[in-house]
Image (cartoon, rainbow, N blue to C red; front, side):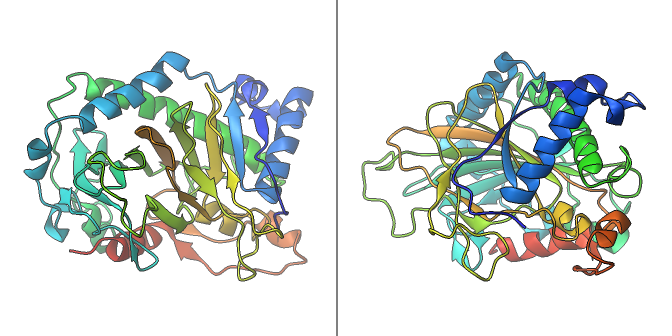
Amino acid sequence: MATDFKSIPMIDVAPLLAKSDDPKMAQDPDVSSVVRKLDQACRETGFFYVKGHGIPDSLLKEVKELTRKFFELPYEEKLKIKMTPATGYRGYQRLGENVTKGTPDMHEAIDITLNQLSKWLVKVQANRLKSVLAKCYREMKPGVYGALGQPMEGSNKWPANPSNFNQRMEEYISLCTDLCRKILRGIALALGGLVDELEGKIAGDPFWVMRLIGYPGVPDANGKDMPENDIGCGAHTDYGLLTLVNQDDDIPALQEPSINPSWVVRNVSGEWVWAVPIPGTFVCNIGDMLKILSNGFYESTLHRVINSSPKYRVCVAFFYETNFDAAIAPLDICKKNSDGTKNFERAVYGEHLVSKVLTNFVM
């Protein structure tokens, strides 16, 4: 349902956050203005900048700096953990083992899980490496989701350095989780539902993923020519509800493509639209589960990542998902707005995620 967009809109969500727990928030004119903007952005681009989010700029910068310091640790320290299915897809991942649509991405990886709270996947730099990633999941206790969750289970591991990494990342995760919950309250109203329409059995106990990413500049750190495939992460859509990207302020790398006619959203001119970094903001995009819930009114827009700058860059991406075992289908209000037509079949988020994990890693 999106358009031939040429730029990504900016939305100040401060009025929405101020009233997000007010039962009468839908009646507030300032909230209604934000809701209209969210609706327009989700329909037309699937991407928007978020300002007025309330997360301190100092913390946005600190998590990127901690990420950078972690990737600067000696390479040998990052080779001690090998990713296997038995570890819940955590551990060291070699160059080319992460695959997007059949094409190896130019990065290596290490999976790390956080004690009590999360699971981390840390992708590290090596020779001819294009990107460095750290990916974390909300912790899942063994057996809680039966066979569905088994591939994501594993033991906790934690980096010793930087020493305050755990504390600051957990604080950041908590703030991002709360921000996404509040933005989704606005989106629920935009879809014509109740303010808590996307909570409860849909996302009352949301799963989440956080990915720490580093992209060496061009040419790479060793001064060699880059490999033929120089895309840090190939074109893809995100799996869940919302993604918040906190990227380096001076080096854009998140690229949102015009989509060929097989996709719902496309740019008629075939141009790529850059998500230019704007200090103090997040780049936010919607994922596959929200597309299904909206019955296709909202689009999970295809995007990819490229760093054509000579500078090394990092970004921190937070993915807010549904409940892990949620069965997702178009909302009744969205089917009603489609003359009763159901454009998507039911999908279980955990099955969707696990299917991606099992096909994205080559062991």
